[in-house]
Length: 188
Image: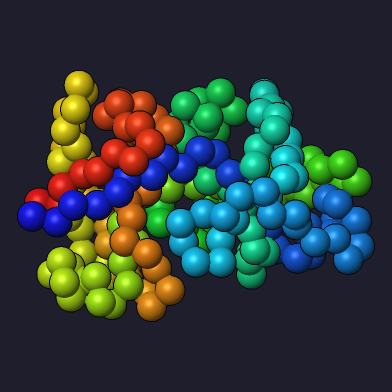
């Protein structure tokens, strides 16, 4: 039995350096607010507004550091509010996804594509992958006990030397399972 800490990931934006500078000004650098569990990753102090023709969501957190390409990760509820239909994908897979307008304090960016619903997934380094008998790209199930017991299926394992053994779900999934801080699941 493999226990894993479950973390709930709220809506957020990953920015390229080019888009960061369009939104905040030339030479701008993100200000880390809180370190995240994955090495080198952080929630930034800065927030943005996401806007479609029908709606907008304010105070959307930026996660750093900057990335090669800009992407927006939403929950299904967020997508419903914005009246868009993003595909369910792993982070980084934005091809043929819908676009969105991102508004910052010094400018805005209109993405042609880049909005996804992030698939629930597990991060593992090679040591943990071997220890828990999982491999990159494998889909597993994770049972979450508690008042709202649920089993998540099709949880994609992502293996990289820099990863820390954690499961990530979005806010809709976390709420459905009653996930609270320091809650663990069992990889089955």
